[in-house]
Image (cartoon, rainbow, N blue to C red; front, side, top):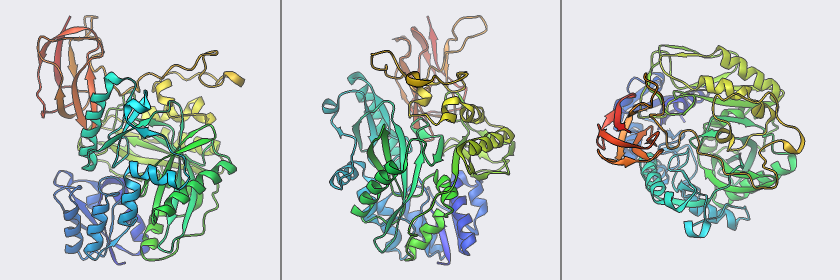
Length: 537
């Protein structure tokens, strides 16, 4: 392998370039017209402009034009697209990823659940809403990363959730199929890193704890998990390997599980490198991108790994630290820590736009113990500086200092039950009172995650009354206008749906009011702060 094209952008493209340079492989970047100034476009040996990152034929054309002999899809975009993998192979290029048939089997979440059950791997029930009951979760059949995902607590919410999930799935993956799955309120999210080769070998490289999430996307990941002991690790690893072998899996991949006590349920197989792969690399000493390339060239995967120490990763985003709404702007100053691993996707002077994921960098600390890794990460975050764009840096500093995080007792409901930047308790309760409880009654369902049904006009104006306008909390595109002038609306009734970074955000009325004016139409692109709807009491 002499020259490799990365069919992706941002941080993962830069990560693959780095591995290629260490292996002596030349690199080719592709860049969309609206992304021409990006760091990855400036960092490869060659750069080719393409019409868009979701155009598979454009990547193949660029690879052939540059004399590349391999294509790495990164994560997102076309990474799990079996048709793209077939097109790459049909062009005589080396595909750095799972075979197309394995991508089809593992990438369709409904088919994957059936295959997992046949392989003796426990799965979360899926089906019609009437069969499952509420709460349930709507998921995109062809993708992940929180796109096309909605939690639904009543039948009245179902139709709107299905419509929104289909739109997000279509925009993110080019496939609007969705399905319903039973929703478990407070599980952990634990995943197993696997690696398979062309000789039928599949190995587990240990687990990652990924329970702390916002907008159904991870913000902190670590390895090993505080919830997994050696016996449970073996059971989950065996289940992941059984499923991978059942579909003929090759290359790096991740089997995601929901963990409820000691019971675990298969959620999906991600047939690609994961955003959080550095924590596994640091505890195992393996380079997973180099391993992908080696497997693609016919080399056997390693027999396994002997994990050492503890690694923790956080994702630095251009987003509001309380609402997690994406932000845009130009980074006028960027200082990233030097004492831990940093995988960045931008540089000082670069712009964060609204068309792509707003991740700035991943910060990953590794130490002999979990406490030492957390301490190193806290120090690194303290010295991190980003100016020119709003980021989640205050949230990350709050997060790694939180007693529940430091104790390792977090679930997927962590940010529902503990609003971002809220005052943490001085200490966690002891004994049977540790964690959520309500005498002998079941715990109440958690409230909406802070970014759902955003009350964009909930602040006060200078006169002490409620402000009379709903404004855009970030730049984006208006995809739905749900009210007209003269309509009477209830508190928290959605008024407008805004899309940014292929995620939808409904903007709601902060109180009961009458709509005085609607200043936008569907399809309008708006800047942050734009007045969308005017209200009067």
